[in-house]
Length: 639
Image 1 (cartoon, helix red, strand yellow):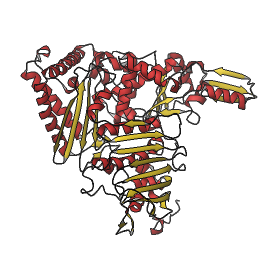
Image 2 (cartoon, rainbow, N blue to C red; image 1 turned 180 degrees about the vertical axis):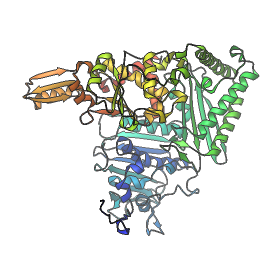
Image 3 (cartoon, rainbow, N blue to C red; image 1 turned 30 degrees about the vertical axis):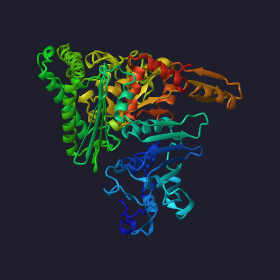
Image 4 (cartoon, rainbow, N blue to C red; image 1 turned 135 degrees about the vertical axis):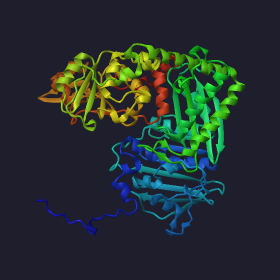
C-alpha cells in the first residue's frame, strides 16, 4: 500500500527573485558546462552591442582577469541610475536583480535588440560569486557590488568624470558551486567577438587576457561588415569573381544585409543571423534567401540562353549554392525564435523582405556584372551535371538507393537496447581494435562499427563520389538518420556516436576525416551534442600492485616521480586500441564510470566552417600557416 503523501498548499514552493535561476541554472543558460559559462559573457556583451545598434556605443572591451573573473566595458550611455518608481531602487539595481527588467521592451530606447533572445544580465548576476557594476553618467561614476545576485552595497558615487564620458563596466566571477568549468577560453570568446564585429560594422571590440603576460590583445573592427566576413571565410578558398556581392534593404522596420561570393569549392558555406544571433537552424530569412537566389539565377540563365548544357532544365538550389559562401543578416524589431535551441527565426514577414531585397538587388547586379553572373551559372551547371550523372549511376552511388536500405551493415555489432537515448555507437579504427572493442563492450547498450583505414576526404568530393565509399555508406546505415537534405534526427539509432581512434597522428587524421564528414553531411549530430571522441590513455604504469593511467607525457612523468618514486615496476605504452586487451579497453575507454569522453559541438558554425576548409581543403598555404602557429597547442598526438 502506498503511503498517502501530504500534498497541499504548504508543499507549493515559490522561488523569490533570482533564487529560481540558481536552483535551475540550465533553464536560463542552457547548461552549466563551458557553453553556459561563456554564455554569461555573451549576455553582457549583447547589452553593449544593443547600445551600438542604437548608435550610442563604438568600443567594447572584454578583459579576462587572473582571479577567474571577466569584465565587459562599453562607451554607451551608461545604465540609468535614477530611482525606479515601482521598486523604489536605482534602475541599475533593478536591472541586475529582477528577471526580464530592462530597456529592450521599450521601442523608444532600442529599435533593434539582440538581447531579447537572452536571459538578461540579472541571470549573470544570479550565477556569479560576485559582480560589480560601474556606470559613468551625469559627470559621475557610480558603483555597486552584488554577491550571488544580492546587493551587498548601495549604489554609490565614487568619483567625478568628464560630463561627456559615459558607459558601463560590469565585472563578474562565475560561481564555482554552479559551473563545472571555471576557466574562460580565449579562443571561444575570440570567435564570438570577431563574429559580432563583422555583423556590426564600425564597432571596435577588444579582448584582453590578463592571465597570460605574453598574450596579445585581439581587436576586431570591420568597416566592411559582412562583406569582410565573407572575405574572411573565403581566405582558404578560390573565388570565382573578385568582388563580394553585397545587398542591403529595409522594409517595415526590418533591415536586411546579404553578402556572398562564389568559389571553386564543392562545399557551400551559408550563415544566417537575426539580431546578431547565429540562427544555425535557419528560419524564414534563410528560406527567403534560398528561394530568391534560385529564382534569380534561373531567370538570368534562361534569359541569356545559358542552360543548353543541361537541356534547358532549371538549376536546383543545391546546384547554385555549391561552393557559394554567403552571410545573411537581418535585424528585426520583434524577432520570434523557435526550434529546439531557439536558433531558428520564425517571423513570417522576414521571408518576403529578404526575397524582395535579393531579387531586386541581385538582378541589378547581374545586369551590371555579366561576367560574374556567367561564372556563377557555369559553376552551377557543372554541379547539375554531376547531380544528374549520379542519378543515372549504379544503385549504390545514387543518394536515395544508398540511404533507403533498412539493412544494417554486416560488420556492425549492434547493441540490445532499441532506445536511442540509452545507446552508444563506437566507430572504431581498424578490425583489430574493432575485435577488442566488441569483446570489451557492454552489449546491452554499446554497439561497435569498425572502419578500415582513412575514409574519403569529403571536403574535396561531391556526394556521388562520397556515396561510393563503403565505410561512409556503412556509417550512414548504422546511424540511421540519412544525410544532407534528407537528414532526420528523429531516425537517430544511437544517442552517442563515439569516435574511437588511436592516440597517434593517424588516429587524429582519421578522427578529423570523420568529423569533416559529420560536419558537412550530418551537421545536426554535432549541433545537438551527439558526437563524442574517446581520450584513451597513452601509458599504463604499475608500481607495487597499483596501476596508473597517464593521458599525456606530462602525466607519465608526474606519476613516475610522485607515485612511483622514480622507479616504476612497468610502463606500458598503448600505441593503439587494438593493442589493449578487452579488460584494459573496457576500463580505460568504454566504462562510463572511468572513461574520458570529449563532446564535440559547434559553438561557432562560421569559424568551424572556415577551419574545416583550412584543414581539409585544397589551399596548402593557409594550412601550413595554421600548423606553424598552432603546432605547440596540439593534443592527442604521438610525438
